[in-house]
Amino acid sequence: MENLTITKLREKLLSKELSATEVVQYYLSQIDKKEKDLNAYITVTKEEALEKAKQFDEDFNSESKKKMSGIPIAIKDVYSTKDILTTCGSHILDGYKPVFESTVTKKLLDEGMIILGKSNLDQFCHGSSTITSYYGPTRNPHDLTKLPGGSSGGSATATAADMCAGSLGTETAGSIRLPASWCGVVGLKPTYGRVSRYGVLAMGSSLDSPGPIVKSVEDAAYMLSIIAGYDKNDFTTYKSDVPDYYKNLDPSKIKDMRFAIPKEYLEVDLTDGVRKNFERSIEILKSLGAQIDEVSIMDPKFAMAVYTVTCRSEVSSNLARYDGTRYGLDGKEKKTIKEYFESTRGMGLGEEPKRRVMTGTFSLSAGYADEYFKKSEQVRQLIREDFDKVFKKHDVIVAPSTPSTALSDKDADNPLFGEMADVLSEGSSEAGLPGLTIPNGLDDGMPTGIQFISNHLEEQKILDVGYGLERELK
Image 1 (cartoon, rainbow, N blue to C red):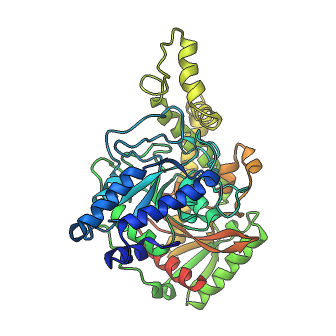
Image 2: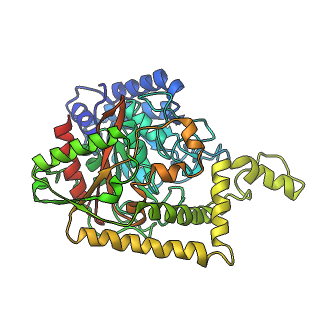
Image 3: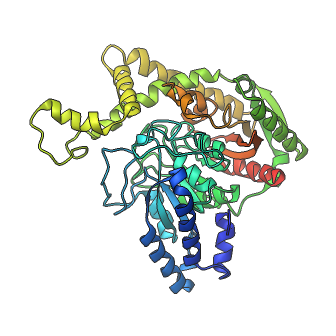
């Protein structure tokens, strides 16, 4: 069973080579063995998972018709899961169990998914390291002294360490692609609005995109076919039909595509191993018939600046709902205003959320909104137009996923650590574009990644390319 992909695991379940109970017991044993060192989970739903597996085994004829039946998945603890602890990695929501299900998890549950547990994350998704979690840092399974990336670090670690068949993450500007790259797994950030945000913590509402972190491109395509689609509860979702990305996978289409490499992405301070593996991957793509051009786009430092202002502004607005009227109280009656706020914002929020709230509030405040937030949105529009120009002549943008392999804790002390680590994915997220990262080698024992970016709703293109390259790299 070691490192089985979702699609391969499904084959074994349908052929009865494995029972769902055996599968769940295997992953629970992996969690028991590795969780103390990795801290990938906040909550493990052992009894519920075993009960769901038993249901699959006892009602095989009915359950086997569902696309995710018997498949144990880790859910980033930012998705609302009915009656299951949902904390967003924060003390404020400690003990909170939603009374409703997020659209994404409901779609997967309707298809028979088994929830193994809720995975760790940076508190309220604020960070790119998973060390800002109230529940402690997650470690990289390839080297316990290294960071897994974030904010979906728990999901990436659980997937890479074979503590689940696959997982769900979310991305605002790199929070799927960064941890997937650093942990050596596949991460797919869909087009903004392709997957519903209903029931998912709002961090940067104009940026957030739920997506899978899995062990193969096939799995990414398979899960996207299930979770994508219009949702009446999320007015930003597209009404267009959802193709069967999995069945439509066709690596032969690489030879018909034109690829663009932004030279500005290669001018970023890339480590030697990242650059070497990227160049090797480009040669493989060329051998598959890809036509690859170098193009020029806006310097990624502008995308970093936009993210710093726009996301923090939206964060300050979204976190205002956790004001202590319903969340953050410790059960004791507060007699003074000072005690009241110390029990909520003071005790409940960590340093990184407070830093982001303060920065965002400042950029939205009277006298500064035009200078900062409005200007940021104007530059963001220029970034969108810049990508549009590239896609007029090219099908896919290709670049390293991150400038380096996984870094260590001391690197995360920089308040702009996340922006620098995500510098190669921020622009595409701000433009609402889909991005896929796959592992493309090792550098001193640590994984490197290559990413593919396509135009809105053209996930099939990057999945086809990723699938073709993935097969050549194995």
